[in-house]
Amino acid sequence: MTRDEIKDVVLEIIADIDEDAEMEGLNPDEPLRDQLDLDSMDFLDIVMELRKRYKLQIPEEDYPELATLTSCVNYLEPKLQNL
Amino acid sequence: MFYKSIEKAADSYDVIVIGSGLGGLTSANRLARAGHSVLLLEHHHRLGGLATWFKRKGHIFDVSLHGFPYGMVKTCRKYWNNTIKNAIVQLTDIVFDNPQFSLKTTFDRVDFTQILINKFGITQAVVDSFFNTVSKMNFYDDRTMTTKELFEKFFPGRSDVHRLLMEPISYANGSTLDDPAITYGIVFSNFMNKGVFTFQGGTDKLIGMMQEELEANGVTICTQSKVDRVVIENGKVKGVAVGEKVISAPTVISNSGITNTIDNLTGREYFPENFIGEYDQVKVNNSSCQVYMGIRKGDSIPEVGDLLFTSTAPDFEAVEMRAMNTCSRTFSIYYPKTRPEAPDYTIVASMNANYDDWDGLTADQYQAAKQDIIERSFSDLDRYIPGARDKCDWVEAATPKTFNRYTLHTKGTSFGTKFEGLNISRTLFKAIPGLFHVGSVGIIMSGWLGAINYGVIVANDVDAYLRQ
Image (tube, rainbow over all chains, first blue to last red; front, side, top):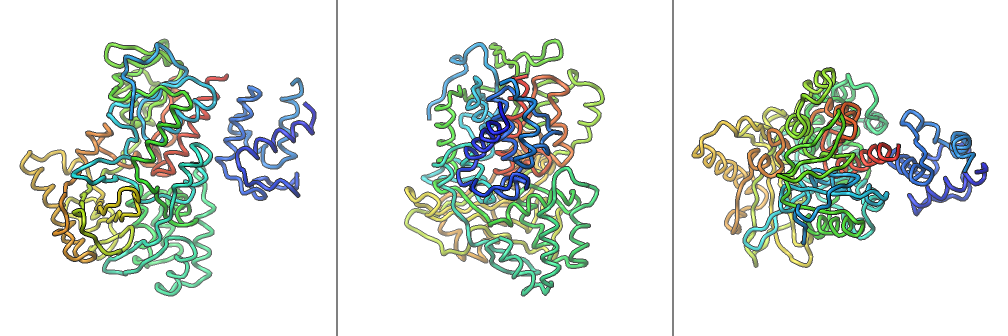
């Protein structure tokens, strides 16, 4: 998957979790948590959905890597490159 | 409601959930939605665990419906469905009445700030600083500070303020001033977010809707199916035994109490020594007593509040609150708005209690002690609803023994374990691969919101295990 495809997947998963999430004007380098009012349960949902879709195991100590949209893409890129 | 008997269960599943408290129900639902085959086993004839109700003489009594934090709205939408979410409504009249203060509040940050400033004479800066401190607390933060120390830091010597802040939380999860400040901060902040909420339609309606959702997602539900033991083979989970029947599964989630799970369902001989060493430090939380009062059809009572925290004890004292002759109790008042389709008035008085106080009694002493808490509850209620006793056509009491009988919890605990139980619960599958626990642990994973969210957290652990 390309970086743009990964970004779209992350945004799609967030939209499924939070139907009110306002994606317009999202700053990719600012924490998602602050911009979209996501809590730790929402991040757990993202982890579980990524596992379901791509059999991707994200250990708990790596959760901070999902903080911003850019850091999500950086973290997921090598893991999803062969898909 | 229709449930299968254990005879109808298949021979194997991906996941077997033992117990149908809100945590067990939520784990089952989440894993079924994720595509796993799930069997849910409950020893009682109805689902819900302590999220339960019972019927007497035309009344429906709710055991734990009032009230939960606003976070339930988002949690129910995400992990159950919108119909369940849409039935959540606010309880606006929370009353405190004790020798130190009497007030009515919506129990949210805005109102509490006003009360602390205007009624207790605390400065805005101190109040803001306190709220900001507790709202930033995480469960992995330092936990050496006790709640008492936290209160002393912000409100030194103000036992009245300590009581206002602590009393509702003691009833909500059995915690005391000696428990870690973070457990207080997390739970208190949840409530202070927007106030106290309830489920319109009653506990029976909520659990019925959850059952429909589970069945729609393909979960097999068997009630009156008491699991005798978790089957372990070569150090790993193999399944469960229910009477003569053995059902196999690579993962088992116990929604039984953590102590029951380790000592009775599994057997401590299967766990590594160092794990048992840590487990033996876990303290079980206290239990409860309740008095249920039903108002005769045609009669009514005035609106005196939804939830009343009452006490005639001079100070807040957790030991006093648990004593058999406590003069501290909450009244949950259920008006016709609780079940608009079947309007009724019921009142549930709740007290904290020690199992051991009730366990040693003879049959006669036990009956007398029950009658005693009924009398004390009526006499306290008279201050708020004069003559309520004469309007009742049903009254009965539940004790720690009752809680033990219906939930099978060790010492009838109604709030799980103290903080140290959380790590044991979360690392169970590292001691025995395939064995997981969900249920009230660590104070923060307690109450309706805590139980459901913990069900989601454990479902994620199980999903990771099954897909590895």
